[in-house]
Image 1: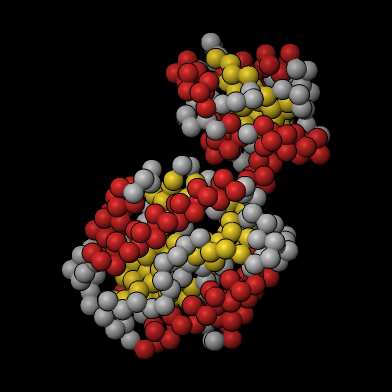
Image 2: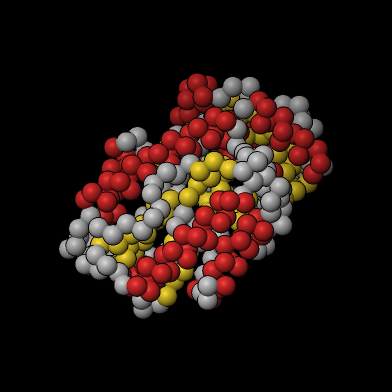
Length: 354
């Protein structure tokens, strides 16, 4: 954690801010290891403070190292104000993408220092995972893989999508997950054409193509996997589309490595699907970063011309969606290496017809 604070300080100096106020729960956990729900961190160029109330002092003392832990007696803003005065803070960076307008108004009223919008500093650090983080994400992926295998064994016609989702979610919890990465998507039949078709009361039928997009949270990090399979023969057009998506997904894996930009990776999948005649049916980006949150940088999209770095963990998830017929998406999580990549999700990708 101390190394992370030092990296943050280097970014603070570039941004010309004396102190940085951390309020995002994910950023707090990343920077401090604190898993409670009340607290803020104030990082200056010389000192690091964590401020919380009496409920979390003992927990903070056990989880946080290398920071001064302070229990605020009155309101937390007054405590931060005292620290800023003692540390002679003139420019306070804050997470403008996280802080509410109401909280900003309070700070603006009582703090004499300049308030400098500075979201993204910690998020940028979080993009490049260390070996410990990657190991945790890999475990989250392993739990998701076991979840997919469980679904293949228990799913049957007559079940509703919600029944499938609930069984999957509970099963991942039984393997050690603390929750799901997002609301589990189970989209069957024509509903598989909905990229974010969360589980509904629709009954699964013979001949349905089913898109299953899900993940779990393990020790604060997420997994994100999509597999599409069928119960009975879904028809030749959907089987053809499946092969196109699978080939596009594999082509991304062949070229993903440090130095390649997000837009270049996106183009690999998008160009292949367009050449196959389904460009307009692929409307979302090819992928995104994952970590403590389900959507982090770097984005694997047309708009990201930044080169990927070793230690990025990204998704590779092209898709084709045909309203009224169905859709296919196949998604893996992978860690970017100096040369190539390593796939963290191991579930089979060839079309499974149960």
